[in-house]
Structure formats: structure tokens, C-alpha cells
Length: 158
Image 1: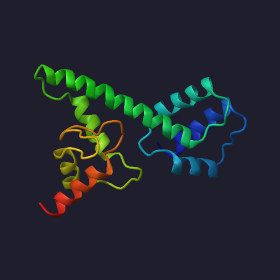
Image 2 (image 1 turned 30 degrees about the vertical axis):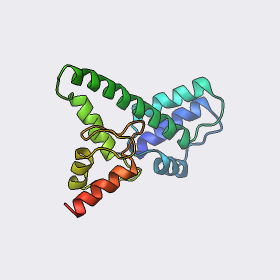
Image 3 (image 1 turned 90 degrees about the vertical axis):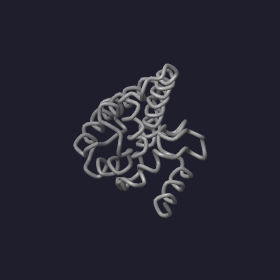
Image 4 (image 1 turned 45 degrees about the vertical axis):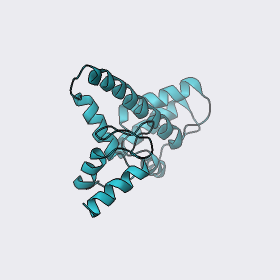
């Protein structure tokens, strides 16, 4: 999300909660704290959802937690759809492949993943959750550390 969108998000949040201030320092802090892959439209809906159910002040951690839940549900839904397609012999859907690639790229930093490691992540099953190769890890929005270790080791020692 861009800083300008974070400023709009904070302005929207302030309309729900006068305890929230909107200034350059707060925009910078929220921009640094929000998960880098969170999109503005989803964040707006998460703010609405928060204040529809709670009276406590909204913090970036609340949005990050809700964002991970949204991503996990999307992945679970796509995995269920993919299992149904596989049961009749259909190839993976484009949405499933997109979500899997997004999951493989989801880190809590902006560091790009080298293509060779990304390929190894996709080519190997996860030793933690036993997700098969070419499938995202179960119950998480990013690959498990053990899967990263396997991928890095295979790149180092092919």
C-alpha cells in the first residue's frame, strides 16, 4: 500500500474513532508496520469490519492479523477448489497458480526472492505441513521455514 493510501486509511479510521490522529509521523509509522502485500481496498474493509464489531482503537497489528486471516481463507478456498478439479483430472486453475506464487513471494520484507529459490520452493513438498510440491503450505500465508531451508539447500547443492 502506498503512503498516500495509508493517509487515506488513517483519515477513514479517524472518522470512526477520534482517538486516532492523522499526521506525517503516524502515516510513516503505519506504512512501516502494515504488511507490505495488504491492498488498500481490503484494508478499508478491514477498518469497517473492526469498528462494526469493536470499540478499541485500531492498530496496524489488528489489520495485519485480519489480513493474514483473509489470505489464509483465500488460499484454503482455492486449495479446496483445486482438490475438486484434481479429483476429475483437471489441470491447476490460473487463480490457484497465482495464489501459490503470491504465497511463495509473501515475506515480511520487500526483499525479492531469487527465481531459483522460488522454483525450488514450488518443486519440493513442505516437511512441516506436508503440502505436496506445486501446492502452497497449509494453514499459513507463507511457506514454512523448513520449506525455505530445503529450497536454499537444493540451490546450494543441486
